[in-house]
Image 1 (cartoon, helix red, strand yellow):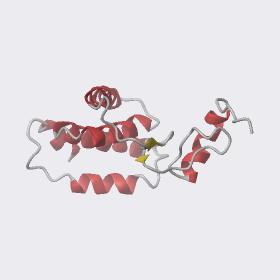
Image 2: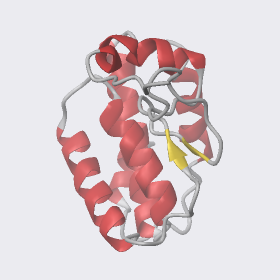
Image 3: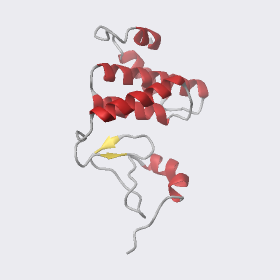
Image 4: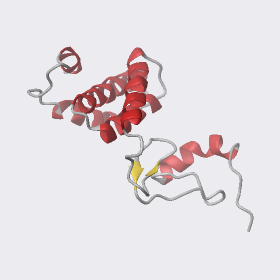
Length: 145
């Protein structure tokens, strides 16, 4: 399915991508397997390509960030980074005010819990907070009371 989408990026109007998106949701539950990680990269890249083709810059940015965040290195992730840069360039000044981005998974929401010490690093969930704790602990600067 992903090859089919990649081969037809010039005309995505007739392709039903829902089965691929559903597979991506099932893969999210356990992403420790390198093969599942590679499949997630392919799916996120395809989604990003579809949204990029549709000129839906916000969704392109969200999905490309998720693609890049997967602990893997591939040509597709490099291409996703390029799509991300181009989408961010096209979105300059268009990001809705008050939208926060999770430091781990790049989910965007209007309201999100933040680090209790520095009050600046947003997280979409406790799971993301715990995943980022070792990295953030080295950069956290608590606010003086």
